[in-house]
Length: 152
Image 1: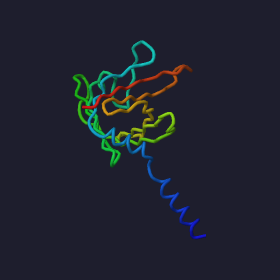
Image 2: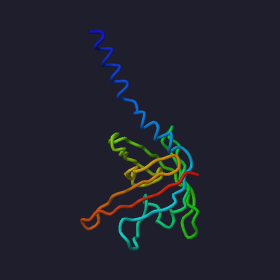
Image 3: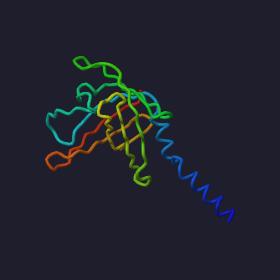
Image 4: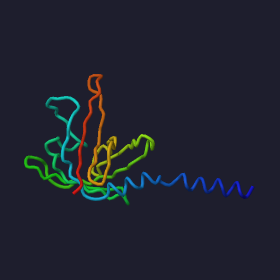
């Protein structure tokens, strides 16, 4: 009985921790990134406001800093014609399927009135590149937004 109790407690402790792969992803995302390019799955001009904050033109070229030990970060917009400055956020990376490498990424601006968060697919993360993909439905048709980052 004692051995079973120890086994159950050990299994419980290990199941609560992040997986090794998830810890590696958090270590890789740490640091400074540039949002180098935003693309859409369909051609055309779209009026998209990202994170309830800024347009594509304002976010392209923005600097991002991720601090995984407290799941926080900041992005900075410096484009002329845009509301420049730093925006703080909280983020969470959640492993959905280790076999496919599918990760869910949640970004929540700290100073938003509606307490909104934004779900994004973390499609790719290497030491030098990161790709976020957001899928939305417009008029019943899927529409993909790709956000390409490069590490500074």
